[in-house]
Length: 466
Image (cartoon, rainbow, N blue to C red; front, side):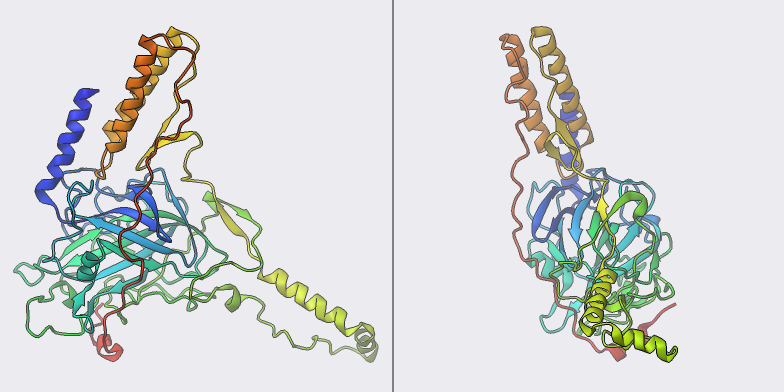
Protein backbone atom coordinates (compact mmCIF):
# COMPACT_ATOMS: atom_id res chain seq x y z
CA UNK A 1 0.00 0.00 0.00
CA UNK A 2 2.83 2.40 0.90
CA UNK A 3 4.48 1.77 -2.46
CA UNK A 4 1.23 2.69 -4.20
CA UNK A 5 1.02 5.83 -2.07
CA UNK A 6 4.55 6.92 -3.01
CA UNK A 7 3.95 6.28 -6.70
CA UNK A 8 0.77 8.34 -6.59
CA UNK A 9 2.52 11.25 -4.88
CA UNK A 10 5.42 11.20 -7.37
CA UNK A 11 3.00 11.14 -10.30
CA UNK A 12 1.09 14.11 -8.96
CA UNK A 13 4.28 16.07 -8.32
CA UNK A 14 5.48 15.44 -11.86
CA UNK A 15 2.51 17.42 -13.17
CA UNK A 16 4.22 20.60 -12.01
CA UNK A 17 6.95 20.24 -14.64
CA UNK A 18 4.69 21.14 -17.57
CA UNK A 19 1.70 23.14 -16.34
CA UNK A 20 -0.65 24.75 -18.86
CA UNK A 21 -4.29 24.44 -17.74
CA UNK A 22 -7.04 21.90 -17.20
CA UNK A 23 -10.72 21.91 -16.27
CA UNK A 24 -10.96 20.43 -12.77
CA UNK A 25 -14.12 21.46 -10.97
CA UNK A 26 -17.78 22.06 -11.80
CA UNK A 27 -20.08 24.41 -9.89
CA UNK A 28 -23.87 24.34 -10.34
CA UNK A 29 -25.55 27.61 -9.41
CA UNK A 30 -22.44 28.47 -7.44
CA UNK A 31 -22.33 25.20 -5.50
CA UNK A 32 -19.05 23.26 -5.65
CA UNK A 33 -19.65 19.71 -6.90
CA UNK A 34 -16.18 18.59 -5.77
CA UNK A 35 -12.79 18.43 -7.47
CA UNK A 36 -13.02 16.00 -10.37
CA UNK A 37 -16.63 15.04 -9.61
CA UNK A 38 -18.56 14.48 -12.86
CA UNK A 39 -15.48 15.61 -14.84
CA UNK A 40 -13.83 13.74 -17.71
CA UNK A 41 -10.14 14.64 -17.79
CA UNK A 42 -6.71 13.39 -18.74
CA UNK A 43 -5.94 10.72 -16.15
CA UNK A 44 -2.17 11.06 -16.53
CA UNK A 45 -1.13 13.62 -13.88
CA UNK A 46 2.08 14.43 -15.74
CA UNK A 47 0.12 15.50 -18.85
CA UNK A 48 -3.22 16.60 -17.40
CA UNK A 49 -2.73 20.24 -18.38
CA UNK A 50 -1.38 19.63 -21.89
CA UNK A 51 -3.09 21.12 -24.97
CA UNK A 52 -4.67 18.76 -27.50
CA UNK A 53 -2.16 17.55 -30.09
CA UNK A 54 -2.50 17.01 -32.93
CA UNK A 55 -5.27 19.52 -33.57
CA UNK A 56 -7.03 17.04 -35.85
CA UNK A 57 -7.30 14.41 -33.08
CA UNK A 58 -10.68 13.14 -31.93
CA UNK A 59 -9.47 14.09 -28.44
CA UNK A 60 -10.52 17.64 -29.31
CA UNK A 61 -14.03 16.60 -28.22
CA UNK A 62 -13.50 16.07 -24.48
CA UNK A 63 -9.72 16.04 -24.15
CA UNK A 64 -7.33 13.16 -23.53
CA UNK A 65 -9.24 10.25 -21.94
CA UNK A 66 -12.41 12.16 -22.76
CA UNK A 67 -14.05 9.04 -24.17
CA UNK A 68 -13.75 7.41 -20.74
CA UNK A 69 -16.80 8.21 -18.64
CA UNK A 70 -16.75 8.73 -14.89
CA UNK A 71 -19.34 7.24 -12.58
CA UNK A 72 -20.97 10.46 -11.38
CA UNK A 73 -23.42 12.80 -13.15
CA UNK A 74 -24.18 16.21 -11.63
CA UNK A 75 -27.81 17.41 -11.65
CA UNK A 76 -28.74 20.87 -12.90
CA UNK A 77 -31.86 22.65 -14.11
CA UNK A 78 -32.60 24.34 -17.38
CA UNK A 79 -31.41 27.93 -16.89
CA UNK A 80 -28.96 26.87 -14.16
CA UNK A 81 -25.58 28.57 -14.17
CA UNK A 82 -22.64 26.22 -14.71
CA UNK A 83 -19.20 27.43 -13.65
CA UNK A 84 -15.99 25.74 -14.79
CA UNK A 85 -12.78 26.03 -12.80
CA UNK A 86 -9.47 25.82 -14.67
CA UNK A 87 -6.13 25.29 -12.93
CA UNK A 88 -2.52 25.26 -14.00
CA UNK A 89 -1.94 22.51 -11.44
CA UNK A 90 -4.86 20.11 -11.31
CA UNK A 91 -4.47 19.30 -7.62
CA UNK A 92 -4.36 22.97 -6.65
CA UNK A 93 -0.92 22.56 -5.13
CA UNK A 94 0.06 25.90 -6.69
CA UNK A 95 -2.11 28.90 -7.52
CA UNK A 96 -3.00 29.99 -11.04
CA UNK A 97 -5.43 29.07 -13.80
CA UNK A 98 -3.42 29.63 -16.99
CA UNK A 99 -0.29 31.55 -17.90
CA UNK A 100 -1.07 35.19 -18.67
CA UNK A 101 0.65 34.85 -22.06
CA UNK A 102 -1.98 32.28 -23.13
CA UNK A 103 -4.52 34.80 -24.42
CA UNK A 104 -7.51 33.84 -26.50
CA UNK A 105 -11.23 33.06 -26.77
CA UNK A 106 -13.43 30.66 -24.82
CA UNK A 107 -16.54 28.68 -25.72
CA UNK A 108 -18.87 26.12 -24.15
CA UNK A 109 -20.73 23.37 -25.99
CA UNK A 110 -23.31 20.77 -24.95
CA UNK A 111 -24.20 17.36 -26.34
CA UNK A 112 -27.25 15.29 -25.46
CA UNK A 113 -26.43 11.62 -24.87
CA UNK A 114 -28.40 8.54 -23.89
CA UNK A 115 -26.11 7.82 -20.95
CA UNK A 116 -23.47 10.23 -19.66
CA UNK A 117 -21.78 7.38 -17.74
CA UNK A 118 -21.17 5.41 -20.96
CA UNK A 119 -17.82 5.40 -22.74
CA UNK A 120 -17.14 6.47 -26.33
CA UNK A 121 -19.87 9.08 -26.77
CA UNK A 122 -17.84 12.30 -26.92
CA UNK A 123 -16.45 12.64 -30.45
CA UNK A 124 -18.93 12.96 -33.29
CA UNK A 125 -22.13 14.79 -34.10
CA UNK A 126 -24.54 16.18 -31.52
CA UNK A 127 -22.69 19.26 -30.21
CA UNK A 128 -24.17 22.74 -29.98
CA UNK A 129 -22.54 25.90 -28.71
CA UNK A 130 -24.27 27.70 -25.83
CA UNK A 131 -21.74 30.49 -25.19
CA UNK A 132 -18.58 32.11 -26.48
CA UNK A 133 -16.42 35.08 -25.61
CA UNK A 134 -13.38 36.31 -27.53
CA UNK A 135 -11.87 39.79 -27.45
CA UNK A 136 -13.86 42.40 -25.55
CA UNK A 137 -12.86 45.67 -27.20
CA UNK A 138 -14.61 47.68 -24.51
CA UNK A 139 -12.62 46.06 -21.71
CA UNK A 140 -9.54 45.52 -23.88
CA UNK A 141 -9.29 41.90 -22.70
CA UNK A 142 -9.48 38.38 -24.07
CA UNK A 143 -11.72 35.82 -22.44
CA UNK A 144 -8.75 34.03 -20.87
CA UNK A 145 -7.60 37.30 -19.28
CA UNK A 146 -11.02 37.73 -17.70
CA UNK A 147 -10.86 34.13 -16.53
CA UNK A 148 -7.50 34.73 -14.84
CA UNK A 149 -8.91 37.78 -13.07
CA UNK A 150 -11.86 35.63 -11.94
CA UNK A 151 -9.59 33.04 -10.30
CA UNK A 152 -9.88 30.58 -13.16
CA UNK A 153 -13.66 30.54 -13.52
CA UNK A 154 -15.93 30.93 -16.53
CA UNK A 155 -19.71 30.64 -16.30
CA UNK A 156 -22.57 29.91 -18.68
CA UNK A 157 -26.32 29.52 -18.40
CA UNK A 158 -27.99 26.34 -19.64
CA UNK A 159 -30.56 27.23 -22.33
CA UNK A 160 -34.00 27.36 -20.72
CA UNK A 161 -35.84 25.44 -23.44
CA UNK A 162 -33.68 22.41 -24.21
CA UNK A 163 -34.88 18.88 -23.56
CA UNK A 164 -34.24 17.27 -20.22
CA UNK A 165 -31.81 14.38 -19.98
CA UNK A 166 -28.12 13.54 -19.89
CA UNK A 167 -25.58 15.88 -21.43
CA UNK A 168 -21.87 16.33 -21.87
CA UNK A 169 -20.87 19.95 -21.31
CA UNK A 170 -17.60 20.99 -22.93
CA UNK A 171 -15.68 24.13 -21.88
CA UNK A 172 -13.04 25.10 -24.44
CA UNK A 173 -10.13 27.54 -24.23
CA UNK A 174 -7.97 28.52 -27.20
CA UNK A 175 -4.54 30.02 -26.47
CA UNK A 176 -3.25 32.10 -29.39
CA UNK A 177 0.26 32.93 -28.16
CA UNK A 178 1.82 30.67 -30.81
CA UNK A 179 -0.93 30.78 -33.46
CA UNK A 180 1.09 33.01 -35.79
CA UNK A 181 4.16 30.73 -35.68
CA UNK A 182 5.33 28.68 -38.64
CA UNK A 183 3.86 26.12 -38.43
CA UNK A 184 0.91 27.62 -36.53
CA UNK A 185 0.35 26.24 -33.04
CA UNK A 186 -3.08 27.20 -31.69
CA UNK A 187 -3.48 25.43 -28.35
CA UNK A 188 -6.84 24.02 -27.29
CA UNK A 189 -7.62 23.11 -23.69
CA UNK A 190 -10.86 21.17 -23.28
CA UNK A 191 -12.61 18.87 -20.87
CA UNK A 192 -16.16 17.67 -20.30
CA UNK A 193 -18.62 17.58 -17.42
CA UNK A 194 -21.33 14.94 -17.16
CA UNK A 195 -24.63 16.67 -16.34
CA UNK A 196 -28.28 15.74 -16.05
CA UNK A 197 -30.57 18.61 -17.04
CA UNK A 198 -33.98 18.75 -15.38
CA UNK A 199 -36.26 20.38 -17.92
CA UNK A 200 -39.72 20.25 -19.47
CA UNK A 201 -38.40 21.93 -22.60
CA UNK A 202 -38.59 20.40 -26.06
CA UNK A 203 -35.99 22.34 -28.05
CA UNK A 204 -33.56 20.36 -30.18
CA UNK A 205 -30.88 22.78 -31.38
CA UNK A 206 -29.03 22.11 -34.62
CA UNK A 207 -25.83 20.17 -34.02
CA UNK A 208 -22.30 19.93 -35.37
CA UNK A 209 -19.55 17.35 -35.33
CA UNK A 210 -16.63 17.78 -32.96
CA UNK A 211 -13.95 15.18 -33.32
CA UNK A 212 -11.28 14.07 -35.72
CA UNK A 213 -10.53 16.79 -38.29
CA UNK A 214 -12.98 19.33 -36.84
CA UNK A 215 -10.56 22.23 -36.60
CA UNK A 216 -8.86 23.51 -39.74
CA UNK A 217 -5.65 25.53 -39.55
CA UNK A 218 -6.79 27.49 -42.62
CA UNK A 219 -9.42 29.23 -40.50
CA UNK A 220 -8.34 32.81 -39.73
CA UNK A 221 -9.11 32.31 -36.06
CA UNK A 222 -6.56 29.51 -35.84
CA UNK A 223 -3.62 31.58 -37.11
CA UNK A 224 -4.56 34.90 -35.57
CA UNK A 225 -1.64 37.22 -34.78
CA UNK A 226 -2.01 38.16 -31.16
CA UNK A 227 0.89 40.59 -31.30
CA UNK A 228 -0.13 42.75 -34.26
CA UNK A 229 -0.68 46.42 -33.43
CA UNK A 230 -3.41 47.38 -33.66
CA UNK A 231 -5.25 44.05 -33.40
CA UNK A 232 -7.27 43.03 -36.43
CA UNK A 233 -10.78 43.20 -35.06
CA UNK A 234 -13.28 41.74 -34.86
CA UNK A 235 -11.64 38.40 -34.07
CA UNK A 236 -12.87 35.83 -36.63
CA UNK A 237 -14.48 33.43 -34.17
CA UNK A 238 -14.53 29.84 -35.37
CA UNK A 239 -17.30 27.27 -35.03
CA UNK A 240 -21.09 27.53 -35.25
CA UNK A 241 -23.21 30.35 -33.83
CA UNK A 242 -24.37 30.23 -30.24
CA UNK A 243 -27.76 28.63 -29.73
CA UNK A 244 -30.31 31.15 -28.51
CA UNK A 245 -33.16 29.77 -26.43
CA UNK A 246 -36.46 29.93 -28.24
CA UNK A 247 -35.07 29.50 -31.75
CA UNK A 248 -35.40 25.72 -32.04
CA UNK A 249 -38.41 24.82 -29.94
CA UNK A 250 -40.39 23.28 -32.81
CA UNK A 251 -37.83 21.79 -35.14
CA UNK A 252 -34.12 21.28 -35.52
CA UNK A 253 -32.31 23.19 -38.28
CA UNK A 254 -30.08 21.19 -40.55
CA UNK A 255 -26.65 20.46 -38.98
CA UNK A 256 -23.94 22.96 -39.88
CA UNK A 257 -20.28 22.12 -40.47
CA UNK A 258 -18.28 22.33 -37.24
CA UNK A 259 -15.52 24.32 -38.89
CA UNK A 260 -17.83 27.09 -40.04
CA UNK A 261 -16.93 30.48 -38.62
CA UNK A 262 -19.33 31.90 -36.08
CA UNK A 263 -21.87 34.50 -37.04
CA UNK A 264 -21.88 36.03 -33.56
CA UNK A 265 -19.53 36.49 -30.64
CA UNK A 266 -21.75 34.43 -28.42
CA UNK A 267 -23.42 32.21 -31.00
CA UNK A 268 -23.18 28.42 -31.23
CA UNK A 269 -24.94 25.36 -32.45
CA UNK A 270 -27.04 22.70 -31.03
CA UNK A 271 -26.90 19.44 -29.19
CA UNK A 272 -27.87 16.00 -30.27
CA UNK A 273 -31.53 15.14 -30.40
CA UNK A 274 -30.95 11.71 -28.96
CA UNK A 275 -33.52 10.77 -26.36
CA UNK A 276 -32.41 10.36 -22.78
CA UNK A 277 -35.32 8.04 -22.03
CA UNK A 278 -33.07 5.01 -22.10
CA UNK A 279 -31.25 6.38 -19.08
CA UNK A 280 -33.92 8.25 -17.18
CA UNK A 281 -37.37 7.73 -15.80
CA UNK A 282 -40.29 9.89 -16.86
CA UNK A 283 -42.24 11.60 -14.10
CA UNK A 284 -45.26 13.91 -14.26
CA UNK A 285 -44.13 17.46 -14.89
CA UNK A 286 -45.52 20.48 -13.08
CA UNK A 287 -47.65 22.92 -15.03
CA UNK A 288 -44.81 25.42 -14.91
CA UNK A 289 -41.14 24.58 -15.13
CA UNK A 290 -40.09 26.69 -12.16
CA UNK A 291 -36.99 27.90 -13.94
CA UNK A 292 -35.69 31.27 -12.80
CA UNK A 293 -33.43 32.05 -15.73
CA UNK A 294 -33.88 35.00 -18.00
CA UNK A 295 -34.55 32.89 -21.06
CA UNK A 296 -37.97 31.88 -22.40
CA UNK A 297 -39.27 28.40 -21.67
CA UNK A 298 -40.18 26.15 -24.57
CA UNK A 299 -43.55 25.57 -22.95
CA UNK A 300 -44.74 29.01 -23.96
CA UNK A 301 -43.62 28.59 -27.52
CA UNK A 302 -44.78 25.22 -28.73
CA UNK A 303 -47.76 24.32 -26.58
CA UNK A 304 -51.40 25.00 -27.48
CA UNK A 305 -51.09 26.69 -30.83
CA UNK A 306 -54.86 27.42 -30.87
CA UNK A 307 -55.66 30.94 -29.60
CA UNK A 308 -57.35 30.90 -26.20
CA UNK A 309 -60.23 33.05 -27.47
CA UNK A 310 -60.85 31.05 -30.64
CA UNK A 311 -64.46 30.04 -31.30
CA UNK A 312 -65.33 26.33 -31.46
CA UNK A 313 -64.84 24.85 -34.90
CA UNK A 314 -68.55 24.14 -35.28
CA UNK A 315 -70.11 24.76 -38.70
CA UNK A 316 -72.70 22.00 -38.60
CA UNK A 317 -76.50 22.27 -38.70
CA UNK A 318 -78.67 24.64 -36.74
CA UNK A 319 -79.45 21.91 -34.22
CA UNK A 320 -75.74 21.55 -33.47
CA UNK A 321 -75.51 25.31 -32.90
CA UNK A 322 -78.40 25.15 -30.51
CA UNK A 323 -76.57 22.44 -28.54
CA UNK A 324 -73.54 24.66 -28.23
CA UNK A 325 -75.63 27.60 -27.11
CA UNK A 326 -77.31 25.52 -24.42
CA UNK A 327 -73.98 25.01 -22.62
CA UNK A 328 -73.25 27.70 -20.03
CA UNK A 329 -70.43 30.02 -21.13
CA UNK A 330 -68.51 29.58 -17.89
CA UNK A 331 -68.43 25.79 -18.34
CA UNK A 332 -66.83 26.12 -21.78
CA UNK A 333 -64.31 28.61 -20.47
CA UNK A 334 -63.32 26.41 -17.52
CA UNK A 335 -63.00 23.39 -19.78
CA UNK A 336 -60.79 25.36 -22.18
CA UNK A 337 -58.52 26.44 -19.33
CA UNK A 338 -58.32 22.88 -18.05
CA UNK A 339 -57.33 21.53 -21.47
CA UNK A 340 -54.78 24.28 -21.95
CA UNK A 341 -53.22 23.52 -18.59
CA UNK A 342 -53.19 19.82 -19.41
CA UNK A 343 -51.38 20.43 -22.69
CA UNK A 344 -48.69 22.44 -20.96
CA UNK A 345 -47.66 19.50 -18.82
CA UNK A 346 -44.74 17.49 -20.12
CA UNK A 347 -43.03 14.37 -18.88
CA UNK A 348 -39.97 15.42 -16.90
CA UNK A 349 -37.15 12.88 -16.91
CA UNK A 350 -35.77 11.84 -13.55
CA UNK A 351 -32.08 11.06 -13.18
CA UNK A 352 -31.35 7.44 -12.33
CA UNK A 353 -27.71 7.12 -13.36
CA UNK A 354 -24.58 8.73 -11.99
CA UNK A 355 -26.10 9.46 -8.58
CA UNK A 356 -24.03 9.50 -5.40
CA UNK A 357 -24.10 5.89 -4.14
CA UNK A 358 -26.10 5.24 -0.99
CA UNK A 359 -23.82 4.62 1.96
CA UNK A 360 -20.92 6.68 0.59
CA UNK A 361 -19.09 8.22 3.57
CA UNK A 362 -16.04 9.65 1.79
CA UNK A 363 -15.86 11.14 -1.72
CA UNK A 364 -12.67 11.56 -3.72
CA UNK A 365 -13.65 12.85 -7.16
CA UNK A 366 -15.87 10.01 -8.45
CA UNK A 367 -14.69 7.36 -5.97
CA UNK A 368 -16.61 6.54 -2.81
CA UNK A 369 -15.50 4.90 0.42
CA UNK A 370 -18.09 2.75 2.21
CA UNK A 371 -18.30 1.80 5.85
CA UNK A 372 -16.61 -1.51 6.72
CA UNK A 373 -18.70 -4.45 7.90
CA UNK A 374 -19.69 -4.42 11.56
CA UNK A 375 -18.07 -6.97 13.90
CA UNK A 376 -18.27 -8.31 17.41
CA UNK A 377 -14.98 -10.17 17.83
CA UNK A 378 -11.30 -9.96 16.93
CA UNK A 379 -11.57 -12.09 13.82
CA UNK A 380 -14.33 -9.90 12.46
CA UNK A 381 -12.35 -6.78 13.37
CA UNK A 382 -9.32 -7.78 11.35
CA UNK A 383 -11.55 -8.80 8.44
CA UNK A 384 -13.04 -5.31 8.50
CA UNK A 385 -9.53 -3.86 8.68
CA UNK A 386 -8.62 -5.70 5.49
CA UNK A 387 -11.76 -4.36 3.83
CA UNK A 388 -10.75 -0.84 4.85
CA UNK A 389 -7.19 -1.14 3.50
CA UNK A 390 -8.45 -2.72 0.26
CA UNK A 391 -10.60 0.35 -0.28
CA UNK A 392 -7.64 2.57 0.57
CA UNK A 393 -5.52 0.90 -2.12
CA UNK A 394 -8.21 1.60 -4.71
CA UNK A 395 -8.48 5.20 -3.55
CA UNK A 396 -4.73 5.88 -3.84
CA UNK A 397 -4.36 3.93 -7.09
CA UNK A 398 -7.21 5.51 -9.05
CA UNK A 399 -7.08 9.17 -8.01
CA UNK A 400 -7.55 11.70 -10.79
CA UNK A 401 -4.96 14.47 -11.24
CA UNK A 402 -7.13 16.64 -8.96
CA UNK A 403 -5.45 14.84 -6.08
CA UNK A 404 -5.57 12.06 -3.53
CA UNK A 405 -5.71 14.09 -0.31
CA UNK A 406 -8.98 12.45 0.70
CA UNK A 407 -7.30 9.04 0.49
CA UNK A 408 -5.20 10.01 3.49
CA UNK A 409 -8.42 10.59 5.42
CA UNK A 410 -9.45 7.05 4.57
CA UNK A 411 -6.05 5.62 5.48
CA UNK A 412 -6.30 7.36 8.86
CA UNK A 413 -9.64 5.62 9.38
CA UNK A 414 -8.00 2.26 8.63
CA UNK A 415 -5.15 3.00 11.04
CA UNK A 416 -7.63 3.80 13.82
CA UNK A 417 -9.47 0.57 13.05
CA UNK A 418 -6.22 -1.39 13.37
CA UNK A 419 -5.69 0.15 16.79
CA UNK A 420 -9.15 -0.97 17.84
CA UNK A 421 -8.41 -4.53 16.74
CA UNK A 422 -5.07 -4.56 18.55
CA UNK A 423 -6.65 -3.24 21.74
CA UNK A 424 -9.55 -5.71 21.40
CA UNK A 425 -12.18 -2.99 21.39
CA UNK A 426 -15.40 -4.68 20.27
CA UNK A 427 -17.99 -4.34 18.81
CA UNK A 428 -17.22 -1.97 15.96
CA UNK A 429 -16.32 -0.24 13.79
CA UNK A 430 -15.70 2.98 15.73
CA UNK A 431 -17.87 5.93 14.64
CA UNK A 432 -19.76 3.71 12.23
CA UNK A 433 -21.33 5.57 9.32
CA UNK A 434 -19.66 8.90 10.07
CA UNK A 435 -19.40 11.01 6.92
CA UNK A 436 -15.74 11.86 6.33
CA UNK A 437 -15.94 14.04 3.20
CA UNK A 438 -14.60 17.50 4.08
CA UNK A 439 -16.73 20.55 3.41
CA UNK A 440 -16.20 21.73 -0.15
CA UNK A 441 -14.56 25.06 -0.76
CA UNK A 442 -16.73 27.99 -1.75
CA UNK A 443 -16.27 29.50 -5.17
CA UNK A 444 -13.73 32.31 -5.03
CA UNK A 445 -14.84 34.52 -7.89
CA UNK A 446 -17.97 35.56 -9.74
CA UNK A 447 -20.50 33.38 -11.56
CA UNK A 448 -21.43 36.29 -13.81
CA UNK A 449 -21.30 35.33 -17.49
CA UNK A 450 -18.58 37.26 -19.36
CA UNK A 451 -19.80 39.82 -21.86
CA UNK A 452 -19.45 39.00 -25.54
CA UNK A 453 -16.80 40.76 -27.59
CA UNK A 454 -17.92 44.03 -29.18
CA UNK A 455 -18.24 43.53 -32.92
CA UNK A 456 -20.16 44.14 -36.07
CA UNK A 457 -22.37 41.19 -36.98
CA UNK A 458 -22.21 42.16 -40.67
CA UNK A 459 -18.44 42.14 -40.70
CA UNK A 460 -18.33 38.75 -38.97
CA UNK A 461 -20.24 37.10 -41.76
CA UNK A 462 -17.34 37.72 -44.13
CA UNK A 463 -15.30 35.12 -42.28
CA UNK A 464 -17.64 32.22 -42.99
CA UNK A 465 -15.55 29.22 -43.93
CA UNK A 466 -16.66 25.85 -45.22
